[in-house]
Every structure is written in structure tokens, then in C-alpha cells.
Image (tube, rainbow, N blue to C red; front, side, top):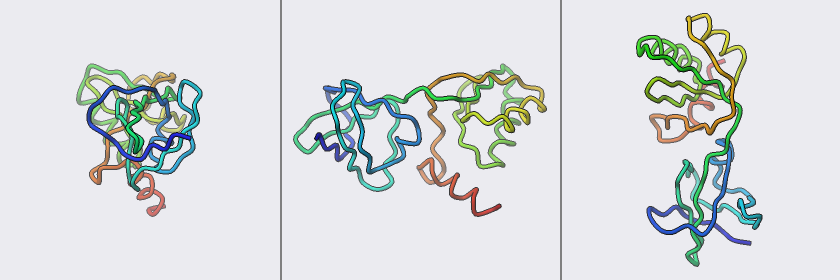
Length: 151
């Protein structure tokens, strides 16, 4: 089994590994590369994998990470103030957000969708890669862990 132990900045990947966000947050994980080969992630604790990252084995095999499509709620709007209001209300609930010009995306939740619609925006539920903003602490998991301590 191929053991992927560290991230590298450059190189020519020899394979592809497509993972959803939840798996890209794990540093120890048995995986199957897109070509069917078994591999294991043995990365330093706290490593977060983003779309396009390269991971390597100790013997130099390079694999490119690809963000898998998953069920997300997408909000498209040309009004930056309306999108900022939506970000404020979602952030207040410690929701992981992908923020782009004219686009806001979060993991699908019908209660959150109803809140966004109540703010006057439209929500599209679709399959798309999810790349949330890293938190102030450089990870994705902190916001979720933080949210559970406040309820």
C-alpha cells in the first residue's frame, strides 16, 4: 500500500485522489486513488488538504488531491451587501463557508436555506466541490468544534 506522508509544493503527480471535505480534514485515512490503487494518508496532525494540493510518499510518488463534488447550497447574488449579510448570519452560526465573488456556498442544510431565503436571496441545492475558507486558526474543524461548545 502506498503511504502518503507529506505535502509538497511542486512536482508531476502520478495519480489523483478525489476526496470530500470531511476526508480532506483527516490526517490518518485509508483511501482508494482514482485509478483504484489502495493508499493511506499518514500526514502530520492538523494537515488540511485543498483542491490541487500534492501529497507524496517517502519514496517520491506524487498524488494530486481533488475536491469531490458533494451536496451544497449555493447562493449567487450580484449585490455584495446582501451576500455580506448572508455571510454574517451564517458565520454567527459557525457555518463553514466558501466565499467567492458573487457566490456563497455551504454544506446543504434546509434550515439554513430557509434563513437565507428569508433574507431575500435564492438558494440552489447542487453537487459541487466544497472549498470553505480556512478559519483564523488555519483549519476547517475549529469552527465546528467551537460551535458545539456554545450550545
